[in-house]
Image (cartoon, rainbow, N blue to C red; front, side, top):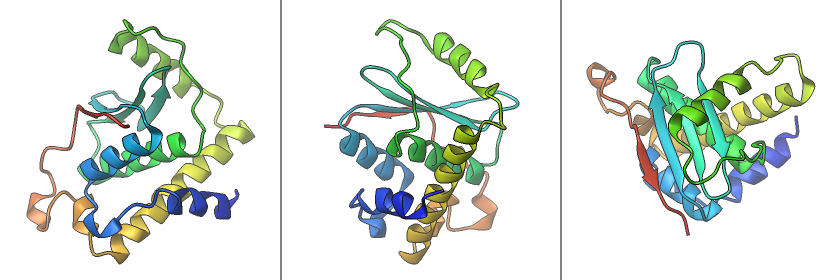
Length: 167
């Protein structure tokens, strides 16, 4: 894994970590990529998350059945795949529905975990998420990853189903 490349990708975002919130960060990513980014929670067993790029949009799906903290970590991990160029364009037309995308997700989940390219991409995405979390912590915004300042509120409803446009 090329940790310098990953750190450089995070630094190139030119993000103001002192004002981090997940929604703000997603809006920033959409602006940087100059394309809409749709983030959706789906209650599926057996998968953490997935990102897809079509000709005109980026999509992130994450598992609603997971704890809110893990949902946010998954969103950061999937953003990493987008920013590191790990996604393959999905050939869907503008009229494709969520079902078509989820079918593609299901097929991608079955990718051989022993594939060295997949392993490298997963390691890089995880490292990206960890670096981002480090910046968030260093700027005293870690509470944004728990969705609350209070431990009793950790099970608040997660950020779901929002889309933002870049550009």
